[in-house]
Every structure is written in C-alpha cells, then in structure tokens.
Image 1 (spheres, rainbow, N blue to C red):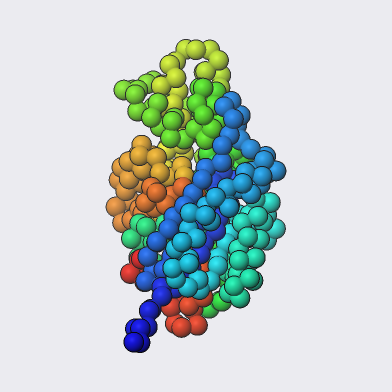
Image 2 (cartoon, one colour):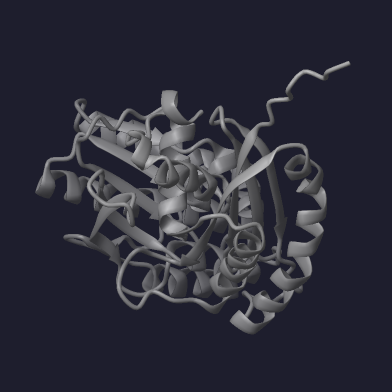
Length: 344
C-alpha cells in the first residue's frame, strides 16, 4: 500500500539577542507566525541595567532553553532559512557584542543544515514587525519611523529597498536624542522610585493611579534633537525633596516624554513633509503616550496618519527578523513587498 505524499511546511527561523530580551520566532511558508518565544534578561533589584558581558552570559543560558521549546515545530517541517540580528542599526560601525551571540547561533544552525543565513539588524526587525502588525501600507512611499526604547531614540526616514539582495530598507537618521535615550530616562527615574528594571510598565501603572499633578519636567527639544538628561536630573531632585508623590513623578515623566516626542515628530514632519509615521520600540507601547500623540499630532495636522506596532510586537522580538529572512530569501521569486497581505 502506497502512502500519500506529505507536504511539509517550510519554516523561517528568526533570532534576536538584544541587551534585555532573548527572542526566537518561526514564520511558516504561509507567512504566519507559528512560534514566538522570548525570555527577558533578569536585572537585580536596584540596578539600572546590565553590562554587555552580563547580557551575553544570560543570552547564552536562555538560547538553549528557547530552542528546546521550538524544536518540535522545526522537526515537523522543513527549515528553509535562518535569519538573525547582527547589529543594532543598519549604519557603519554599529556593533554590540550581544548580537554576536545570536547571529553565531544562527550561522551554526544554517551551516549544519546547509541553509541560507540572512543577517539583518535589530532596528530593521522592529520596523518590519511594526509594518506587519500595524496594518500599515507602505506602497513605495517614504515614511517616518520613530524608534523608542532603552537603547534608542531615533526618528528615521524609511523606504523599501527593492533593488538590493543585501538590504530590506533604506534608512536615514533625521532626529535623535543628544544624550540619554528615552528608555534610560524612564528606567533611571523608575529605579529611583523603587521600581524594578526595566521600569516602563510599572511606571505606567504607577502613573495611572494619579488623577493629576501640577508637576512638570522640562521639555528640551530643538529642531530634530531632544534631550532627556535635564528632565532626568529635575525628576531626581523632585524625588529627593519628597515634595510630590511617587505617582505624581511617574505621571510627570509620562507627560514629559509624550510632549517631547510630539514636538520632535512635528518638527520632522514640517521639515520633510511625511504623511505616515510608524512608532516602534518598547516605549511606544505605552497607552498614555499613544493617546497623547494621537490627540496632539493629528490635531495639528489632520493629514498625518499614525501607526503603532501591536503592543506584543512593539517590544523586542524576533518576529520582524524572521519576516525579513523570508522576504529577503524570496526576492528572486519576485516577492518585493512587505505589506501585511504578503507577510501575514
């Protein structure tokens, strides 16, 4: 008796090892996410972060555990390609040791299985996940991506790069922080308020318990640059005086970051004429922040369309990396569009 032929799914593996999250994802040949596994790196209470060596060690502990979770999926199908983040951003000399670990795992898996290895960057993965999860339609036009996280505060011009087999996007930095990153500001104040690191979610919850405050932290925005060192120093002084409650300080931080980014984005829109803005990164998942921007940016320019990555895909993840691996590998077959219909 002859057995019928079994059609195995083809899978695309994505790996991302940022400074605070170990992530694996599997995308199938129907462009659907079939696995999304993550482990947040543990930071001791009171510390404001991890060194690269500490993060590297924790990723090395986490990756075997995550691969154990997804091995049954890969065994049940055919692995087509492996993609991994190799650097923070697609710019010269962009480097962090933590990405070396994830990319080396990916290269070994690809080599052993005689598969293509696709190297992308952490920021490109965020952009891809943001486009895919927000339902944004790119249609070949340039758009503004606002990347807000513990290690990044950047406003970048993005366009699809359909002419290269090496790159997925053409990215140009237009605005950024001149000192502290937005996530550093949040985390430093949060830790000073007694919260765990990273402090974003807990600080948001703390602020939500405050009905209002007269406390305002300075807004430091000039042209396409924003500064958070002054606001952070002001917040620390307020905490030391005890003049305001913890909840009021937390709310003041949310107001500060929301108004600062609103002004920064507005300046870029006025200078470069963007019609679409995509917000990505862990800080961009904050509800207060999203509501504030929608109210104030659209109010000042009703032609602007704002897109936010789904909260689950706003924080660090390997889904965007896997999607880019699929997209890059299939370019020779004519797949050059990253719109939602193609990938999801």
